[in-house]
Length: 186
View 1 (cartoon, rainbow, N blue to C red):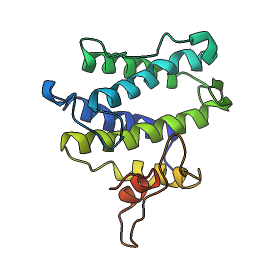
View 2 (view 1 turned 45 degrees about the vertical axis):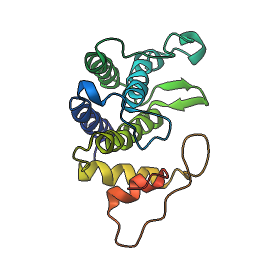
View 3 (view 1 turned 135 degrees about the vertical axis):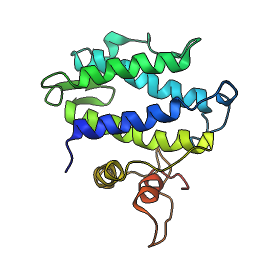
View 4 (view 1 turned 60 degrees about the vertical axis):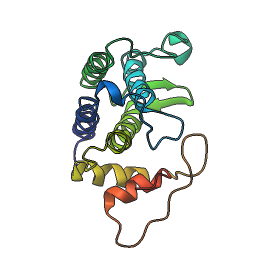
């Protein structure tokens, strides 16, 4: 199995590559995330990255409060993404980040679990962004393999974050199986 920290870097790169393809006229395009356009999707991932340094530093959700609510992209959304992702990645590369206890909204979790969640989200949303932009949807095959293996054990189902997994045929690619786990139609 590839190192999780390396998988995260690959997933970050996959999403980053798609963000850099966004043109001025693309921000209002719909995405596979029913209620999000491209701006909302990139804002979601940017906000997730902004949470990483304080959470890995031991902060609780309540301590951060509402300061990361709303639109965090501002006037230079791509630059804002670049800074947030760089700071997030630096926090993950700190020694013992995977062993840290992180205080998340659903309770305490290991840094490793949090990093898996972040890697999964970056991977799936890289596909979402590519689909919205009409860009290349192919994701790194090793990343897809490892994230699919992790996600398959998470018991995704209908709920606040995902629809029920989409039906796929026996010859469906591993990437499409991963995407289908979240209820998306590959």
